[in-house]
Length: 232
Ligand code: SF4
Picture 1 (cartoon, helix red, strand yellow):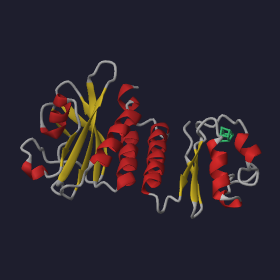
Picture 2 (cartoon, helix red, strand yellow):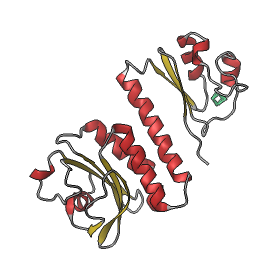
Picture 3 (cartoon, protein in one colour):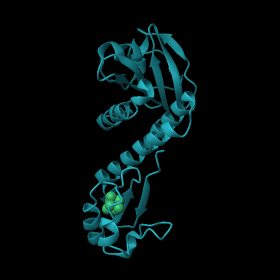
Picture 4 (cartoon, protein in one colour):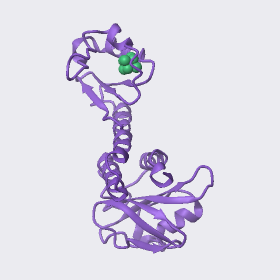
């Protein structure tokens, strides 16, 4: 079962530990025993040594289980990297914490929505003739099912590409998600082998011009991370 990502911080440095990929080499324990000590409940004490020493020790981790992010409060790139790592861990956890597909879909949507304060996130299944919502976070979608060619989902599936519409009122293809929706992004989930569209990730905002390149890249990466939701 997937385990939760652990995060340890000081004002200078943040260290994350992913127990799912640790190879138990003991390199960290031998390099900085004051910082890394499995006898403690919180086994990483980042404040126990100089941040440069901590960073150097983390870089020796052979599995990548340990990662460091310098001064995340002031470093936008480092904060983004950490947030992404936390999100992907939550996506993996969501898939292991229930046997119920709707619960899993809802947990995935909640994790994505929380990562960037999105107003609405939904997963849709692409069936032979229709899209059907599998789960969501935010207001219930107006259309839980709709014809496969309809809406921005239909357009994204046909074109097999992400659609980012930053003013839905100006796009004739838009099918109402909720009355409050002003921007919407649809990422098609494509089977890497068959190239079939398996479903979509739908992200919506109550603001116009809510989405940019960072959002697009993040949600496309999420689609790759959670493809097993549709294939398994
Ligand atoms: S160095 Fe990395 S792989 Fe080895 S025990 Fe520490 S965290 Fe695990």
